[in-house]
Length: 236
Figure 1 (tube, rainbow, N blue to C red):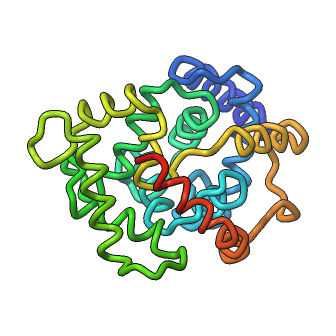
Figure 2: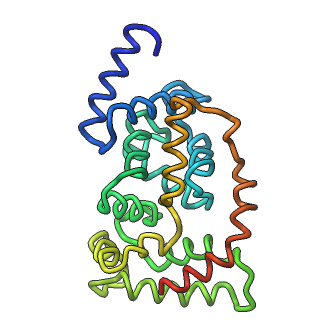
């Protein structure tokens, strides 16, 4: 955005995004620059695989299902790619969103068939994806089914056999850890601080030196799976 027209377009984008995020002008400007650099396949459009790489590199989200679901949660218009406003607004919710922002994002991610409910079948698919990697002597499917019933009991406030957004919101109000009950789709504080520091130091510019492949990140996470499995069980 070196030209006068480009600078004006960027300033207008920053002004517009100030109205719909909790980010300051500098943060938005840095995120716009980062978005431009991340769009390697097509100018102005961030593709799914490019976005998955970003989730892996800085936000420690590596589960295949949830990476795709977070992409869908960012892609409000279901266009198949992210525009700059999708990226900045979504990352803004990651970094300093309200609890309602996080509830909506997680619910959208967990609602696999986009019917505005989380069903037992969706819970089973999500929990199996994020839990069965840990070694266990029990039948994995049976363990997951047991967890599904526990989660359903905690979340299904109107007892209709499925979880609506109001149900999910009420469950999170009672216990914030329920945001991650079906898998991680939000960054922890350490990840957020690392990303913000990277933005300031790099001026928002993409650097492959900071890149960690999804397979490498999964190897790293595999060493944590047993501990994570125990922590997941403790939530219930």
